Every structure is written in C-alpha cells, then in structure tokens.
Image (cartoon, rainbow, N blue to C red):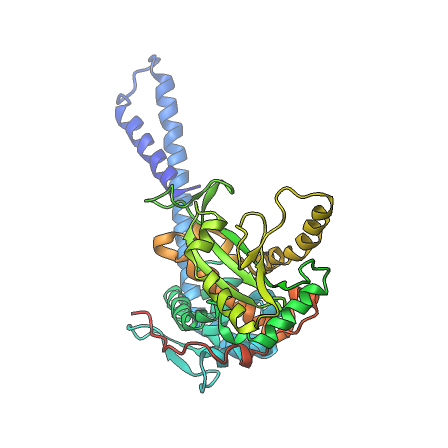
Length: 408
C-alpha cells in the first residue's frame, strides 16, 4: 500500500479519536462513531507497522546493494564477460561479443579493454568496455538507470554519466548520416541502379532510381510549450519527423532531422539539402543516365525524385505495384532499427524534448544499425537486393574527427 495512503489513514484516525467524547457515556447515540474510531485506530496501527517493516526492508536491500556493488562490478569483468556467449550479448546489447570489442576500438582507439576513463568533473571513472556495454545495454530496450547499475555493478550516477559521455563520444560519428559522398561515387551509384533494376524496377531508361526515400515519425512525450507544432495530425500524437534515404546495400545514407511533428514529407524535402546532394550525384554520373530517388505519393515529383502515378491507368497501375514492392524496403529499415534493434527510442515517456534529446537518440540508433550492418556484412535490405555493404573501415574512413568531451 502506498505510504501516502497510510499517512492519510493515520491522520483520519487521529482526528476521529480527538473528536470522540471522553469518557463515552453509556448507551450513547454516538456509539457507532466510537466503534468506527476504534476500528480506524486499529487499522492505523497495522498500517504503521507495515510501513515500518517496508522501510526496514528497503534499508536492508539498499545496504546489501551497496555492499555487493563492488563485487558485482568485478563479477561483470571476470565472470560475465569471460563466460558469456554471443547469444547473451545479442539479447542484452544487440551486438555479438567480437562486435562489441570492435566497436570499443572505434570509440576508444589505442586504449586497453579495462582502462579507466574519466567521465565527469567529479572524478567518476569507468572502464572502456563497461562504457561501451552500458551504452548498448541502455539503447537496446527501455531500461532504467537502476537496471544498468544492477547489471554492471556501478552506481546510478556513474550509469547516467556513462550514457551521456558515450552519447558525446558517438556524436562526431553522426556526420556519416548527413549523406557522405564516399558512399555515392559513380561506380557505386551504377551498382545501386542495377540492383534496383534487377528487382523488376520500371525505371530502366535514362532516369533510374539509385536509392529509396521516406519520412518517419517518432513519438515523443507531450511538450509543455508549442504543443501544436509537434502534434502530428496523421498519427494523432506528438512527434518529431525525420527524412531518411536508404541505399540498396542496406546503409542508411541520409537521416535529416529532427523536424516538427506537424510538417509533412513535402515540407521536409524543402527544408533539407537533399535536392542539392542529388544534383551533385547527377552531375558526376554523366549525361547518359540520370540517378533519382524513388518515394511514395506523399512527396512531390521533381527532377531529383520520382513518385507513383496519382491517377493511374491500367498499365500505370502495374507500374505502381512493381515500384511499391521495392519502396517497402524503407519500412523494413524503420522496423529493424527502431522496433527490433534499439527499442529505447520508441519509449515516448523518455523522449522529452528539453531533457532527453530524442532527436539525438534516434540518430545514434540509426548509426549503430549502420555499424552493425557493416560488421555483419548484411541486413534484410542488402539480402533483398543482393548487394554487399561496405566494411566498417570503409564506412568510417571519411568521418568528421572531432574530439569528444566529458559531461561537465
């Protein structure tokens, strides 16, 4: 029973006892009130005893947790990590054990596995392996800081600083989601167009699709100010929008956003620099072919983007069906990244605009999905188009190098 109910019951019992006449006259008409007051006093005594037991048990659990925290910290290093299998790490962190070690080297190059890193101005430290694992553990599912502290044997404060420190460490890598040019060189664009044509694409002439584009809506908690700006009338909830471009090799080439939830797909294209980037790709492709993006009917037909026929004839209807089957691959990516792999971004109660930075969390989730695709050499999109994704070294070759800072 909640403690505030217990305190309210005690207060009510005290008031009834105080208002009761002393001593009660025999055979008084207020006997019912006295009996009720006595029962309330008995219940209040029971509530006080239960509350005392609950507080004692809580203090005992806290003491045991504090005493065993150091033991569990060393247990994760010497027992869990030494004896766990790849299936265990995939369940808890979405990466296999060798992939986690490789990812640790990406975030902390030239460091030892158990080397301690300063993560706050107050002297909090953690090993590079625990930082990487705690970061992946946090993003895998909606978990609290208590879950992290219990699993890794660290305090809630260290767990919070560890996640924030890793977010700042990963932030320089998010430039790889801004449409890097080393992933759309002319030979690569030709491979993308041929892979889409092999899947019954109707764009086989001079105009050919090399990537698929779509917008995605991510839920957030109801904001305090500007609620109308973030309310999406189509999904009927408060949200932020992103513009996503997926290549046939399974790599998310561009993730533009976040934008206000009330904006539609057409407005997202106008606000982004996607058209300028596609124009650069068309200029480098030569005069014989025109690479374009393929989108759904929510976008606008332009020189850089092709959409289905709005009022199709019999022949155009089959064209829409064939191209619609190819465009569905973008929806696979959204489901694999946000619904299956990194579910923390879907928990809207922890997506508060001014506190939790939901846009940054979504971008980190898409970046981690790209890294996992490069490490495994495949994902459902690349399997569908039979196209190999780049290696991790090739994907990270042209990233923006910015030194990460601690959370001060």
